[in-house]
Length: 286
Ligand code: THG
Image (cartoon, rainbow, N blue to C red; front, side, top):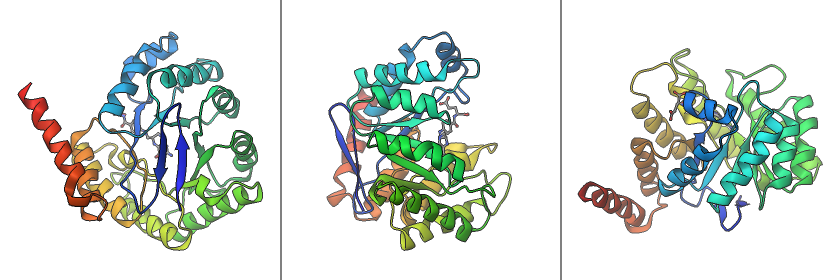
């Protein structure tokens, strides 16, 4: 299964047989007061620098979330997409729960976008999938159904399966449905990590779709989040995650993903690992 996405000038291929594709998570006002304030004031200049920085750090897709309470998300998301596409040529992942904002953003988007996201709830599927189809986009399906986010990997698999089937009924192929098994913080429930890892294995073995994961959710509320995120990312990639949503500026996470590629046979002769090391050494010298 190969998912192909496009921005203004670059096509990205996601597959279990290829190196991991990082979806850069930084364009998101959650936990970033300065970005939230800038967006609320209609100032999009931070988006450009955030976009360029993440691409330089190795992101191949950028998540765009501009959800700030009290703003017109429809206008803001479309403007943000234009702003970021003027700065970087790779594909974007449009992160919104607002269908009108999603429609407006896809209307101005150049290329083939990834929509973030749809749950397995009937109302959400009816609202989001027709928009995905109309614009020829791909979509992230969350393992979350009418009953919420289950603690049972089998039930999360059933939610994923439902999304794939409902997409197929609209002629959206499995290549264009990326599954998110969902990571919840292990600080609240010590079984949360294992449930997510088991769901990833089930989705990989029974559906075969590409799999994303907002791995940093797993560490909310705990100390030394970078170590936890990096470890969880490497474990998740080992069992089937192909395009995690993470912070590429977090060097620990970045290195864990490069190491995971190396150990999974996706980095011939360690070329990418060595290139990253050399670039880091040059950074230290200058
Ligand atoms: N699945 C899917 N989409 C998602 C998520 C997911 N989108 C949002 C989120 N989860 C992934 N994105 C983020 C963005 C930021 C943070 C975590 C996940 C984060 N921010 C820091 C904080 O809140 O402390 C601030 C970071 C900073 O200043 O750099 O942790 O699971 N499909």
